[in-house]
Image 1 (cartoon, helix red, strand yellow):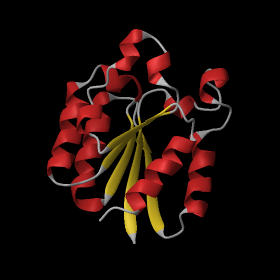
Image 2 (cartoon, helix red, strand yellow):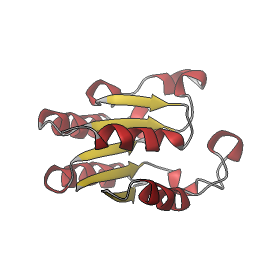
Image 3 (cartoon, helix red, strand yellow):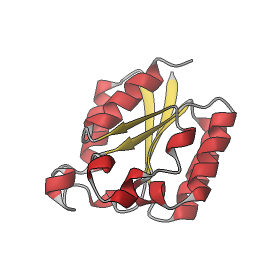
Image 4 (cartoon, rainbow, N blue to C red):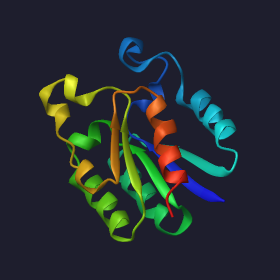
Amino acid sequence: MKHILIINGPNLNLLGRREPLLYGNRSFSDYAEELRTSFPEIQLTAKQCNEEGELVTALHEAFDSFDGVVINPAAFSHTSLAVADAVAALRGENMPVVEVHITNVYAREAVRSKSFVSKYASGVISGLGLEGYRLAISYLAGTD
């Protein structure tokens, strides 16, 4: 059984309440339960990190405990070399990491179109809402 870590960055704990026109009206915890039902053969662990160091630590913990990572670094995508370096370290160990963004970051403010993380991710899914997580898990389920 594969074990996949889902990491959400800052402010994503407010999904369902925060800017519903952009992010929808579903909480991630509700959606995570739907994902677990959709992927019974995969053990999914979800973490929410509002602090940069906490997010980096979660990535470090993935080394020995997980087979892949789905990460939505949120604003840290555009600001954090530390997060990018942690993803690069995982990639160097052949751990697949998929970067997900709920909104189309390329259709938003210019600063959001540059992600330090994307260079090291196996793939990037942007603008498909919460469905991006399902697609990322499907991809990771098929990797060896």
